[in-house]
Image 1 (cartoon, rainbow, N blue to C red):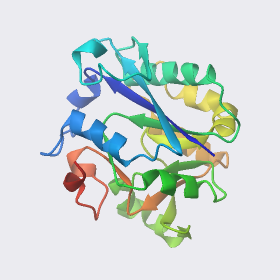
Image 2: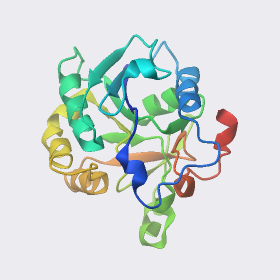
Image 3: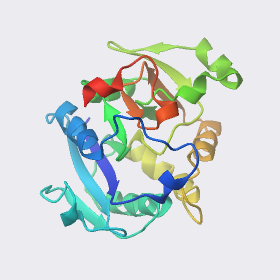
Length: 231
């Protein structure tokens, strides 16, 4: 299996205007990108940058020298996700290829791609590296009753995650209508509802713990890890 990362970047995102979206004090978008490149294994993983130029051109950013880029013009998270889905379908992917949808505000720990590959040795459809802190609230307490294990990590079933996740290409195509549904006529993507829908249809999602990535949102960092040191 190969990991194909589709990394969505933009010059500016209106999502960050929403309440509760504060960044940690160590946040730096360019350093986050360098962290991604420094931690991936080129033997198993390749990436394509999907750049939304609606608010600014790629040549005016630190991505200007990147070669593997595809330019879109959307101005919204959900619209850019739909365009990313369309682009992926034009690529020559095999059924077993892993597609990793990645947003531009995630920090990774080394070996994350190995953990991702191991996750797909389990009988699941979707894998996230983000140990989402809100899943430890009382309403989700029963989720901790079942823990799975691979050679290098423990993983748990979770009901949902953000719009950063991994899936095999054959599963993505089978579930395409669901992914389109929750990113159409809405901003941003209704990711929580989407994964609840997928779960109800038997398409289970697991998360490693502790996380091998974190969303860079100050109050929802993956627990137990000093993420700043990876920048």
